[in-house]
Amino acid sequence: MAVHELVSKMKRLPKTASIVLAGAVFLAGCGESDKPAEMFQGLPQKFQEEQKFEKEQTLRGTVNDEKEPVIQGKVVATDEKGNTIAETSLEGSNRFSIVIPAGTALPILLKAYREGSEPLIVAIVDSFESQYNINPKATAIAEKAKSLGGYTRKNLMAAAMMSSTVPEEDKTTSGFRGDPTKRYGGWH
Image (cartoon, rainbow, N blue to C red; front, side, top):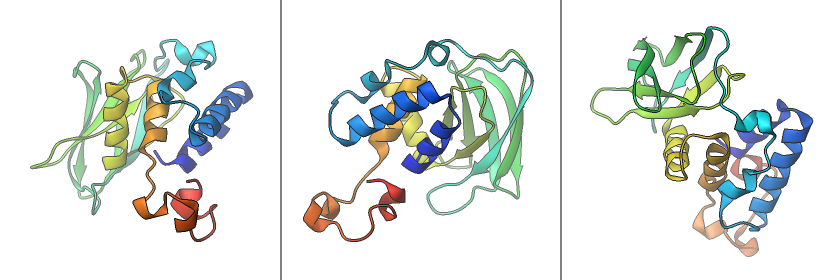
């Protein structure tokens, strides 16, 4: 998830959560924490509790690999243990729609399987979101969150922040050229 996507999601959160997350993003940008997952300890209790889909939920999105849309394969929703919840096919389009039954506990994983490749993954920890793009960046974030201790909101947010990369030649102020609001998706 790019930083601008994180900011977009923050706008939909209650004001208290947005303020906490904005502060964490600021501190991360300033290098104040060498353990990004710890920055999210102060999330409101409702974001730390186990969530589930209270009613049947249709999740939609796209599947893309590094170079192009994935138009053949399948998307499978699983729990953390790999148990299948639901699945759908990609047939000539990279768009998917998958129905998650009411009462399904979060987190769940959407895994896009394509012939000859490892699955692409996106981890879902919130019941209020229904649009997901499954791609290599989402997969890297999910894998990093798992390595930080599991698919939790704080681990996914920390993984997303750590996945923002700056080209080596632009890591100094003398190497930066251009408008900082347009470079690296608006943040760097």
